[in-house]
Image (tube, rainbow, N blue to C red):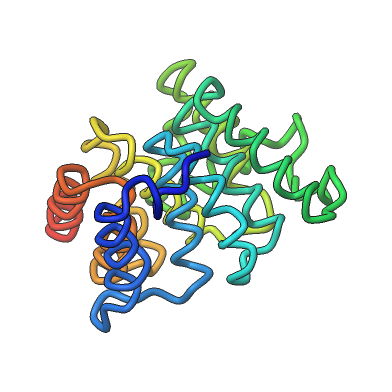
Length: 229
């Protein structure tokens, strides 16, 4: 791999200063380190920044993100990005963990069985979006899959809190772009769990160096829209 410090020194100077010092150090936009790194990991999955993910993953671990937390980010990405886009990131995560002496597989974080994943998934949806979601799975097959697979198989897992899971979902959506209706809905879901508008704005700001200005500005607009709903 090219050393950007040597091949592109001018670009590296500005990029390194902005992404790694200016943005994290802004007093009005700072996040607690673990939260910041969880957001960045999810954003890099969302924007398909595999090589940057390879650099960020060890930095996240060094900052206090546990292997379980980091892997849970990758696992949850499957529902919002698709297996085809997440597969390379899962391979990269496993390579990095094994290189650091972490034994795989990690301890199980599952809390549902095939028999109750629909019920518990619908309960998780209701906790985030309101009691009307308890019956939303009855609207069609994809709605049922959403309840039992997305929420029942993933949101019910331990390793991350429900509020952390909604935050990383927000990052998946803002980073991939073209998902503004879902981004607005999940901004509202975050707010329902205590991740208020100011917190989400800080999340967007910390992801901005990795996903760019257009998607970040769109995300800010979605936060504003959700705040008024």
